[in-house]
Length: 276
Image 1 (cartoon, rainbow, N blue to C red):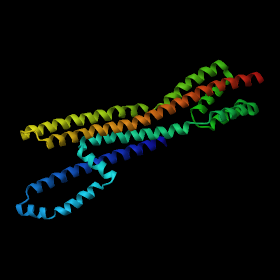
Image 2 (image 1 turned 90 degrees about the horizontal axis):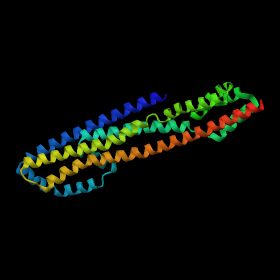
Image 3 (image 1 turned 60 degrees about the vertical axis):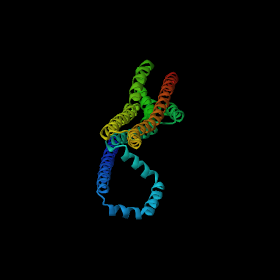
Image 4 (image 1 turned 30 degrees about the vertical axis):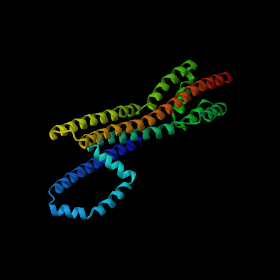
């Protein structure tokens, strides 16, 4: 079920990224065509444009009232769909992995005190077999560690301790699965943004060289477009870093529960052996 969920998320992410990239490319093409049409206007068309200056002012007011989504879409197009798409893909994939980890870790969390109390009652009333049934019916790494310890209980307490430690390492590796990909996207998004900035600056200087003059509007526009990719990469890194820190703290909390419950299991088995 978890693999199917991740596959659906990845397919959705790539489809969304490709759609946005295609839309951005179409927007760039439309802007280019509009610019060429404007350059070919006749003097009569220029006079007609001046006659509707009031309508243009009203349109400007409408643009100022644009929604946040429209503003983000405009900045995405201005930053260049080539690099902005890669930053967006990092965000979507990072969020997909983080969402899967959040759901998995929350499902793996149990009330350790109640679980240990149930195991203790089962040991007193039904013995080791009853405790195995309780551990088997409970999800999470804590229950899995108890199950391994209870299975090895006839071999002695020393074997139980070694088994719990070994299986605890396996469960810890499962809990940390996927975090390395989130850390990769955290490092990759700003680097892609910086690359877009550098390439944008190179394009701005090429435009200055072609014009043969340093125009303030030309330089400012090129720098603004170049810096949009950097800002986008940093925003993606910040979002994913917050989720990464939450996931790390969640894993540490579960590992602490595992260590505490392992000690409790050994104590319960020792007490049960002495009573027997």
